[in-house]
Structure formats: C-alpha cells, structure tokens
Length: 239
Image (tube, rainbow, N blue to C red; front, side, top):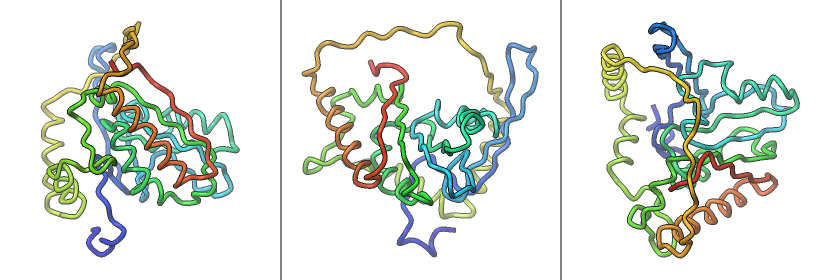
C-alpha cells in the first residue's frame, strides 16, 4: 500500500488510515446488552475531521481519552463540540497508548501533513496516565541531547510491516476478530476518580528528563505550527 510513496511514509505506532472498524461491546450495566460502535479514521488518520475547508481547526492530540475507540462516530466529545460551534472543526488526533514521547514523533511525521495546516489555530495536548511511565529515568533514551522516538526497532518494524503488507494486515484483522469473539469488552463508568498527589522532589532524574521532553515537544510543535496556540490539559498527574 505505502511502498509507492515510501519517501513520504513514516510509521506511527497504532495509527490506521482510511479504515472503518465495527466494535462489538457489552454494557455490563444493562444485563450484557450488546452495543455496536463504528470507528472510522480518514485517509490522513484522523477522526471527526470536517470537509469544510473554511473552518478554523482545533487539533487534539492524546491517548485513549482522546481516541475514544469504543465511542461510535458522531458521539465523541469532538463531535459534540463540533455541534456546539460551527466555526471550528475539532479534529481527533488521539491514539490509544500514545504518550508525550510518541506525540513528538507524530507532530513531525504525521500532524505536519494535516490538510489546511494554516487553519490550525489551537493544539490541545490531552496528557494522562500513559505519561506515568515517562517518569521512569530508564525509559527515556537520549541521543546527543535529542529524544530517540523510535528507540525500539521492534515497534518500528512491526508497524512498518502492518502498514505495508497486505497479508499481515489481513492476518491481524482475522486474529483480532477471533479474539473479540472470545473476549467481551465491557464498558462501565466509575462514580469517583483517584486522587493523585504531586511528588515534591522535582530534582528526580526522571522528572528532569520528562520536563525536557515536554519542552522539546512544545518547540517542535511551534516550529510546525507557528501560528497556533498550544494548550496542555492533564487528565491526571503522572505518578
């Protein structure tokens, strides 16, 4: 699929393009009632992207809370915000499992190719629990002072084959369908969240590297989207 355009290709872990997936979910609050959800990403890899080129764009980047894999099309919080404000297009650029570490690579290799890039007025980084592992001093690898986003060649090769091999893509599709038939995905909401306390030791090596990562992410985003405002929203404190 992508070998023809290899010069413009870069694997983004977990990203699918121009694909619709139907998920079969089970609502454990309604006697195992089956709920079907439609999940679609366009040719650029985004959810909830309008075809109206005159709209100003608010691009949201995050993990599962942004991605909303099991929320059907038209019901994501991006879709709701789209309905409330006709002047803006709230685009879903989230991928489940991503961290600020992978956002850095995505800004350069994925989001920089978004159509109507000059229309992006605000970029929201919705960080959350996936960033907790970045506080581990051994997790982040630095090469000459810069972050090596694809430090693990296994993930690079796996995503490359998944994106470019017809047979591997079909094999994984059948495998996932088989797993889904034998595994119920339940959806439930908690009545209360968990309280996190900020670690006062800000001199910890893991925190210092995490801080550098965020500053690097901000600078990279500014270089790609110089006219866009940048907003970080923290779902919960990485602890």
